[in-house]
Length: 164
Image (cartoon, rainbow, N blue to C red; front, side, top):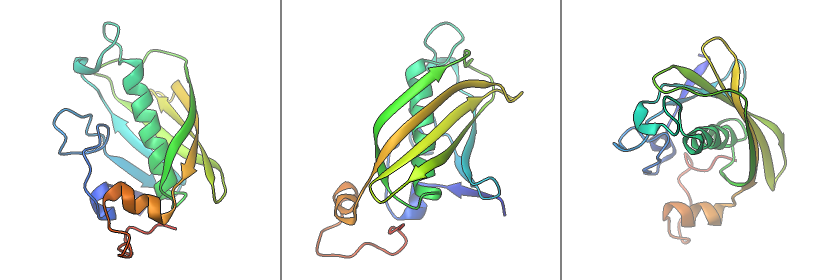
C-alpha cells in the first residue's frame, strides 16, 4: 500500500491544526499522506477565494503554512521524529491560484539526532513547481513532547506516540 493517511488522531493526541485538522471549520483541512514507494509526504489541495491574497491567488502566508505542514509531516512519517521548525526559506516561482488543484510534496534531505533538514514544493497539475521551501527542524525529546501534548512527566508516552 503506497499511500498511508497521516492524521494526529493516529498518534494519540488532539489538535486543532489550521492546515490539516479535518474538524477545524476555519482551517484548510488538507489530508496528508506518506507515499511509501517514493518516501515522501504528499497532499492534494484546492483552496477557495477565502484564502486569497492578490485577486485569484492564494495568499503567500497560506502557501508557507501548507509547505511547513508538509515538511513537519515528513519529520514524523519519514524521519520518525517529532520536531519544530527553526529556520525556513521559500522561493515563489509562479502564482498559486485559488480554485485550482495543486499538490504539495515534502521529503527529508538530512537527519541527525538534533536536526532534520527538509524540502517541499507546491506543484501544478502539470508538474510545474510553483513554490519550494527548505527548512531545518529541531528534533523534540520525549520530555518536550510530553509537555506539548499535556502528558504528565510521571507517565510514559503511549507507545503509539513514541516515534523514534
